[in-house]
Amino acid sequence: DKGTYPYYMLKEIDEQPNVMRKLSSEYLNEDGNPEIEEDLLKSIKQADRLYIVAAGTSYHAGLVGKNLFETMAQIPTEVHVASEFAYNMPLLSKNPFFIFLSQSGETADSREVLVNVSKAGYKSLTITNVAKSTLSRESDYTLLLHAGPEISVASTKAYTAQIAVEAILAKGLGEADQIKAATEFNLRQQLGLVATGMQTIVDEKEKMNQLSQDYFVNASKSFYIGRGIDYFVSLEAALKLKEISYIHAEGFASGELKHGTIALIEDKTPVIGIITQKNTSNLTRSNLEETMARGSKAITIVTKALAKEDDDIIIPDVNSMLTPLLSVIPAQLLAYYTSLNKGLDVDHPRNLAKSVTVQ
Ligand code: F6R
Image 1 (spheres, rainbow, N blue to C red):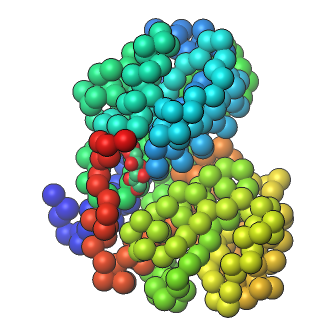
Image 2 (cartoon, rainbow, N blue to C red; image 1 turned 90 degrees about the horizontal axis):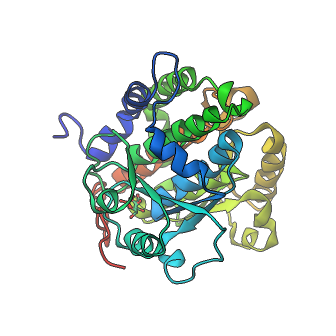
């Protein structure tokens, strides 16, 4: 039931602070340490490499997870699109472990990979919102997203829940090995900060409505740019916008724009820069300026610590590995309002289904 909300998508965006709190209470004990079944941790520890396999938004959550697993657990991690991996499998490491990310647990492309790797004798974990879903039943282990039903076709709370569960698992793995990046990471405190930060952003949603009206409703194309995990969020932000507003949107590695794509920038083309990482913030800012010199309307989503006077959307500071949990929220809202302002059916975009059970 969507209660007083006009669309499920807005309700689900607003639920995200509570999903973060719920995950904290489901997975972290009194000391703030992850409680994850011993057998799962052991099974992953025997692996020399993690392969995250997923589709769409879940794939984007996987990209963000790579950094968490490599930093906190120090396990090399690859992230793959399921439909590609299924028929063009790369050379695997000696002892791979597979992680399937899937909100529905029913995506046929992901299942195709699961069937193949299980046949080959490899162990796997499914991170999903749906207990007893196909992927959950057919893999060795399951971690649930506890996000509550996600009804809107455009995925929002499942994306942030997936990233949070990846962080919990990465910390659990790192802690078992006394890896400093994990033991010194106060995840309970951080998820608390994330929840409060999300609330601040959703409370200012009218701002995104205004931006949508000013620069997006009449746009035919747009770009999100960033570097590192900001680039990965750009991919998700662009997917949200295109799937429900039908505006052509691309997520781009900001340094790569000048190698060709900048030719697409015209007068008033909106370009949104996501800037949350200290080591690349100035570079992304220069890349944004390069687009402005070609007439773009540049908009910034920036963490408080890196903000400058003319920035547009300031998001609260959290640990640098978790900024995607906040930087994605303005993008979700911008997509929502652009779809709404164009009079479209936000929850049921054309040509799309909630779970994709064909390959
Ligand atoms: C985008 C979206 C899709 C799904 C994709 C995978 O908003 O919803 O891209 O993320 O179809 O679905 P799951 O996560 O159910 O495997």
